[in-house]
Image (cartoon, rainbow, N blue to C red; front, side, top):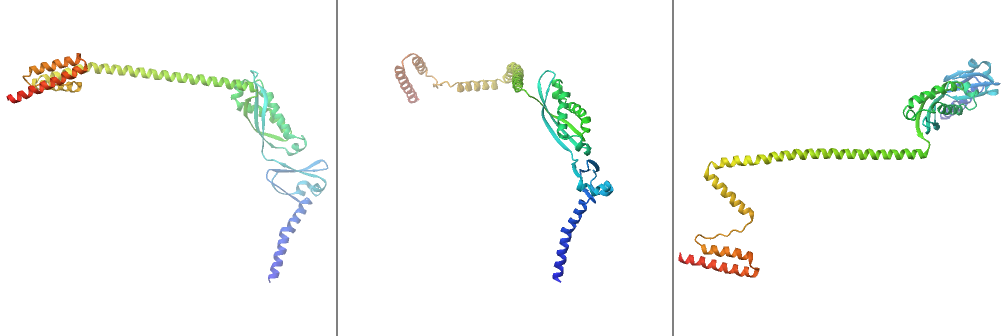
Length: 329
């Protein structure tokens, strides 16, 4: 039972993966059918003549499409596989001159696809190169002598002009031109580029300096306005202060006791804040008063040693007078 199962599995494997593919390959070789993939076109040529074009994807029965030529085309003819997928190309720096005489370079990006496979194969030996040359020539022919400002700004209009110029000619070679876009417009002269860079840098410096100066002027105007308004407010406050103080003093002066007490307090506060030396003298000490006055005058006029001796003598005299008064009491 196991041997029969292994034998059946072996023959099934050989039949499925060896015999069947070889059988279908022989059918394709003898031209019974063909499988066309997506976005691929097959062109069959027999004895220098196109006998069939298969541009639809799927399974095709060749005798129905090609007739009796299907049995000989794979042996005596030739089969071309044409890729119909969208293709892209970028042409760098096509040389043009502006109306002002500036040497410019234009970079062109365009799309193309094969619309007529037979014309693509037999009407031009290098249709891709011919299309690139046609696009480059159309760019130089149509975009030369444009104003520099239009060349730098109106890229969409320039792309439409190039596309309209190239489409009719490319269709004859089996190519269909898709989107065309001017990606880059640049200067080709390095000296001109450096001059433009220097001018741009100088202009930026001028604009920056003008902005800074305008800002400084605005700050000065704001500062002067604020100072003027502050000065006016301070002047108003200075003018109002005497009136407020006078009104307050007038209200206080209505009561003599409160007024005398307030002025006495203010006078003592001024003496304390002034830092002056205060000497307290008992009542009835006229002689001591005269001595202290003489000492103050002598300290201002005599040399320091004599002034020190005089101070000591006055201190002794004051001490003696004070003791005498205590004894008499």
